[in-house]
Image (tube, rainbow, N blue to C red; front, side):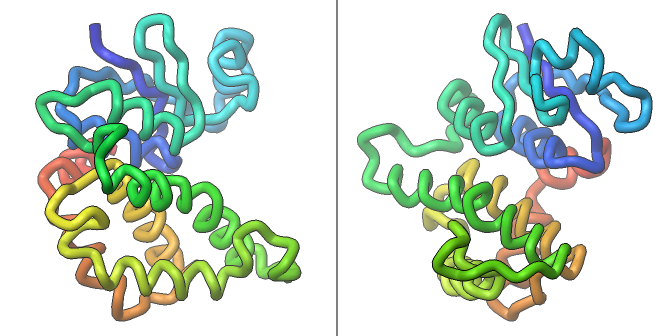
Amino acid sequence: MSVKLYHNPQSRAVMMHWLLEEIGCPYELVPVQYDDGSMRSDSFLKLNPMGKIPVLVDGETVVTETVAIALYLADRFKTPNDLAPAINDATRGDYLRWIAFQSGAVEPAMMQAGAKFEAKREQAGWGSAELVVDVLEQRISRASPWLLGDKFSAADVVLGGSLSWAVGWKLFPARPGFADYLERLTNRPAYKRAFATS
């Protein structure tokens, strides 16, 4: 049985489509439109009461929220491609840190940059958009070639995918430390397959 990903190419679901291509497990895309009311239907709200995508269905298991879906998929499907360090692997902490940084810091910083609102750095969990960009540049410029060194992981998909959007939509400046990493990501065959069909 393949997993089902409720998907729209103009959403975060495209990162999970890319991740499924990287993992190599069987999957089915379930197209969802924004303007037809389907995400407010009773059947969809049973999957995600927030009425948003992505949503992943794996048998009886339903997972929502981009980072949760990424963690689930990378831990659930270890073959043919293993994209998550084992629980006792020394790199597991760094992996979890940077995959969670996407929702805890990058997403709100993108919102702050786009909406141009001020927030007190000591009160905002992400600090500020400028701080997030600075921290990202420091970390991404050390990716060699990936966040975990030679091992490509789901953290590269989630964090790299968001960074690509943030730079592409000019929410974050195109810092020199970002360019090489983003080029390596977009040259991956799985990335090209996912975005060719999205």
